[in-house]
Image (cartoon, rainbow, N blue to C red; front, side):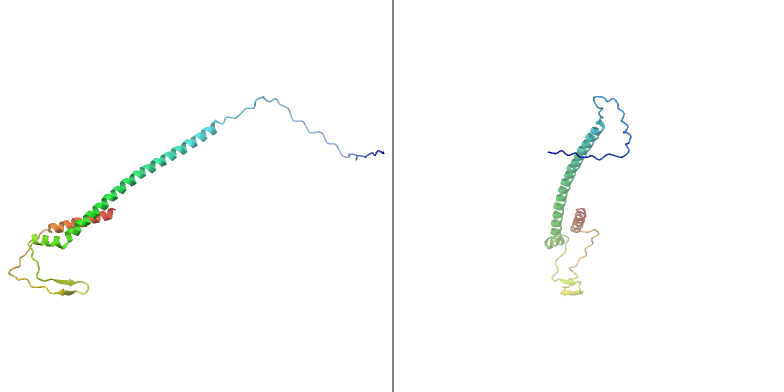
Amino acid sequence: MSLMTVARPAFRGSRTAPAPRARLRVVDATPKTQSHAGFVALCITLVVAGLLSALMLNIQRAESSFVLSDLRGEQTQLHDTRVTLEAELSMKRSPETLAVEAERLGLVPSPSTAVLRLSDNEVLGVAAHVDPTDSFTVITPFVSVAQKDVARIERAIAGVVQGG
């Protein structure tokens, strides 16, 4: 076997000066740790603030629930009052009640009636003449008791409708 030799290229360039060495210093065996107390305190503060705000929101919601319950009860009571007043007003306006009240005031029924239609101002029916000897004059300085009740009930219904 034959041995061959390999030639290496020669390095022809300028040599640079070796890099300066870093200065060595003495290091403690245990590295100094920084305190994380501020970060921990911040985290705890944020958690406590979040819990307190959730608690306050829950308290407000519960209080609002009680207020809503009270308002619903009041609404039911006002509705019942309105229904009662409307029934009382219907009773006061009924022909039977008006006839009884008219008789109590001394009024007599007319033998015939006539109706005025307001849309065209036409009189429907024939009104009988009242005998002057049977007539009487009713002086009412105040509104009758039935009219006072009707006015009071209408005001109460208007108040209930406006209030709820």
